[in-house]
Amino acid sequence: MNLNLVCIPGDGIGPEIVAQAKKVLDKVASVYGHEINYTDILMGGASIDVHGIPLTDEAIATAKAADAVLMGSIGGDTNTSPWYQLPPEKRPEAGLLKIRKALNLFANLRPAVLYDELSGACPLKEEISKAGFDMMIMRELTGGLYFGERKTTTENGVRKAVDTLSYDENEIRRIAIKGFDIARKRRGKVTSVDKANVLDSSRLWRAVVNEVAKDYPDVTLEHMLVDNCAMQLVKDPAQFDVILTENMFGDILSDEASMVTGSIGMLASASLNDTKFGLYEPSHGSAPDIAGKDLANPIATILSASMMLRYTFDLDKEADAIDAAVQQVLKDNYRTGDIFSEGCEKVGCNQMGDLIVERIC
Ligand code: NAD
Image 1 (cartoon, rainbow, N blue to C red):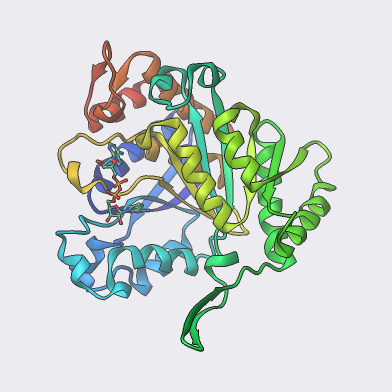
Image 2: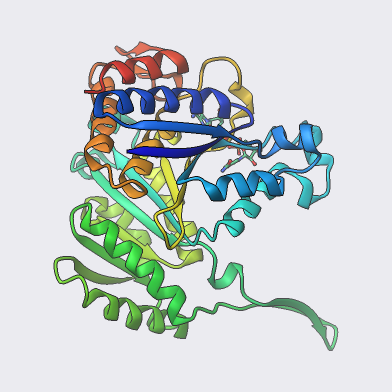
């Protein structure tokens, strides 16, 4: 297969971690007989330095023409970098919002996996963490409360603020379809999370998810209220496969789920539109404090590349090969500084990339 990828190395540790993911993809391509073409574009601070803005229209056009985008991370030290003296729409993060909008990326996927070898980093009690967990949070990204009408007024000397939470059935249906499709590639269970005991938007959410479920008789659907879900994530995270939810609930629950893994350098993510196209990036930021020192953990980016093979290209075998190589490197006790524990061998970003490449088969 020919894979046309756009890469956004970005800022901070971005270029280091993307370089490792490319090495891993190249090894997969050579073992499984694929051809990968990479085109790099600038975004964030790197684009500001060259073009004065965080993302150019040309860069967007290049991304649109690709099959998928693999990104490192963007942004600098928000206290010291001159990028943060610029008006908000010219700062690095504006590039990210612009590309998400331009590519219509409405579905955000964040896996939260507890690896046996890293269970010591999990802040949950051992009796809970010993069961392990492997879940995928699927969050609607372009609707709901964050995009609804809002205003602040003063009435009779009293300040008042209003935010609006609205969803139409089409917005719900397209994300639900993505959620069920992804459950089919996993353990076949969807937990749809809402607040249907209070909110009309949640009652519509639940009704539409039930309609979509009829086309997926092989996938088990359950509904859970968001307050209960927040508790269950720390009480019994092993019960979850795909958590399907709206924008604000997903924002909060996905951060909670990543915290319980305890290892920020391991968390991949993807943002998808209604085609096979996706933007794949680690969940963490550009870590300016360790940039250029060969200290970054590249695994979140490498696992994002694995998600890209699985969800954009349907190359499940190849994605499995990457996931297995990551697991093996942990079993073999190699760790970057962020996940290091006594008795393991500490390695840098580049060596971690090489060790994973060696284990691709
Ligand atoms: P951060 O995730 O960059 O860093 C938080 C802490 O985690 C730091 O101590 C960092 O060294 C560590 N860390 C993060 N990734 C790591 C990795 N792969 N390996 C080892 N350690 C790692 O968050 P922050 O410090 O709040 O933000 C830094 C910059 O990143 C800001 O400019 C922010 O806006 C940007 N940011 C970008 C994205 C994105 O590109 N999608 C996401 C979040 C933050």
